[in-house]
Structure formats: structure tokens, C-alpha cells
Image (cartoon, rainbow, N blue to C red; front, top):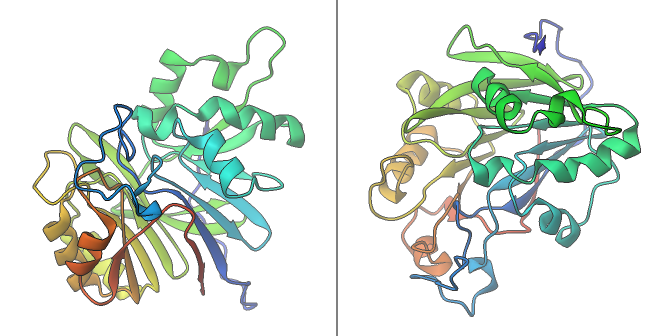
Length: 278
């Protein structure tokens, strides 16, 4: 097991090109519509209400980093344009809707001819080893798919270098487990969280983010996720240039949610592409 080493390298004086963020999915664990065909409050005529499980793709200075590998991954990559390569993966946590497409990374591993670095919490690594051993150990003639880079937070927010890029990562409460929140440059991402510590919210504000994507699973309170009013309160505190809501259930119609958020806040949608400066 290889631990992720916090970065201590100085920032480059050369400003890299904008960070390109593709929203591969912004739905909750069942997607929208649910597998039963239920659309809930969502208008099925609006294509922005059709949501795959939450995941984003980051393209930064010729590096491509995937955040989460849910069960929709193959469809997401083919629908929104498969990247030429993947350089690393960040797994926010081990729940099925963020993990169970992980085997699809195998084909990118074949292209690169070496194991893919994956950045994850110790409990996520333990879950994968217990349930999908071949991911790290290989099986038969399959080589190991991933090289685990285990993040061991020693403070509220840590710097972690991923493919030469310095990310800020932190833990977020998500019912009985914790998830990873992340920031790079003017972009931050907080999926699957039911609370954020004041220190985290203050730091998000102090970063003066251009874009912050945050969880709001439904209108009503939820035991494991932020709900709409909670996330709106976070957005008021952090004041990003643009706030985006993700991990939305069938209870979050796109147009209704848009009408009930601040001027700078809006629901994300699958296929949304952002360019964010540093």
C-alpha cells in the first residue's frame, strides 16, 4: 500500500490553462428516472432532468482525472466523449453509486500499460480489498488495475499532489461513513455530505471560488445528504461565483429547483462543461 504524500512543492509562476470540468452525472443513488421508471417531481420532457449517478471528469494541464466510478460510467464516458486517456482516479467513498463501475477503468489501464493511481480513504481501500480483491491484486492473467494512494488526513484540509497537481482534500460526514471533498484552483466539489464544518465552509469562502458544486439530494431533510435549504445556506456563506447543485433525486425538478435558488446558484445537469480559471 502506498500512501498519498501531501505536497510541499512551490506553486509554479506559469498560469496553466483553464480547468475543464465535465459533469458526467449529477443524480442520486438511483438516478433519474429510477429503474422503476419513476420520475417523481421531475418533468420527463426536460432532458436536464435525466440524471446519471454523480461523477465528474477534470481535464487540467494535459492531465485527465476522474472523480468516482459509478455504475453508469461506461455510458457516461461514451455519451460525453471518452477521454484519450485517464491519468488518475479519485474515489470519494465506497458506496455503490460511486464505485460499482470501477471495472470499466480496466480498458484505460490496458491503454497505459500500468496500474492506475487511485486516491481514496483507508476505509474505501479496505472495502475494495474485501469485495473486489483483483482491483489491487490482479487475478489470473489480469494485472492489478489500480495502485492505491491512501489519503490519511492529519488536519481538516490537506494538500495532496495528484499527477503533479496540488489538490486540497478534506473529509465530509455522510451518515455512517465519510467522503472526500476536493478543491483545485477556482473549483471545488462536495458530493455526498450531510454537514460541513465551519472551518471547511470558511476556507471555501476564503478561496473565492469561481465554481462550487455541492450536494442537495432533495427538498426535504435527509439523514445522509444535504437538502436544498441547507445547501442554499452554504452557498450564501461561501459566495462562489457560480454555485451548482449535484446528487439530485427524482424529487428535484430542474426548473423548479432553478426557480427556488439564488441568482448565482443553479442545478447542474449531465453533460454540463465548465471552464474554470485558477
